[in-house]
Image 1 (cartoon, rainbow, N blue to C red):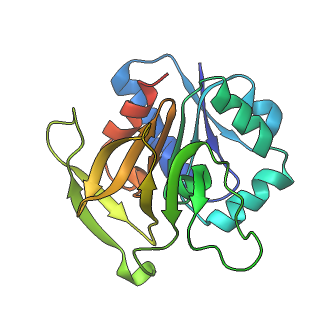
Image 2 (cartoon, rainbow, N blue to C red):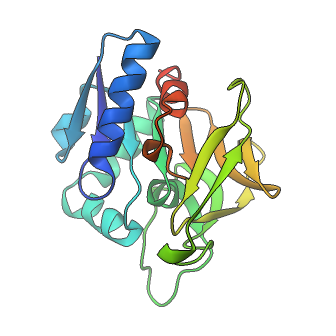
Length: 196
């Protein structure tokens, strides 16, 4: 089994470490691969889109011919997780677009997102999050984080911060506005792996 991490830009190495740790804890026979080409998607059981810069990631999805193949992967029911910028890329609507379409999202999840809603890098923060089935809280790290401002009726809200969704799931798609790869806690990655 292969679990892919989109490796065009962003927190790739941190996610590789977290996924490898989660694979060991869950007891899966799986390998993590860094994805840069469309042909690498074919053998994947799941794909993770990391945080980074959403405009860059969105443009490179088109440039490297990954945009449509990822959409097809989602339609086939394979799990896809996006964190921070990855959440933006998964959204169906971006409410803070300026000028011509700056970011064309994959539109895989019925959510509307406001990019960088929590402020600049220096305004980053940590907050404990209650996630169903996790037992104790999970440390949410928010860095230039987006906010999920609307969720469709088929979207399940798994965690909130001040009543605002920060972790949501719609069938095989999982989106987070925080960075689970930056803590020594692989429960979010294990949750994702269990979606396979």
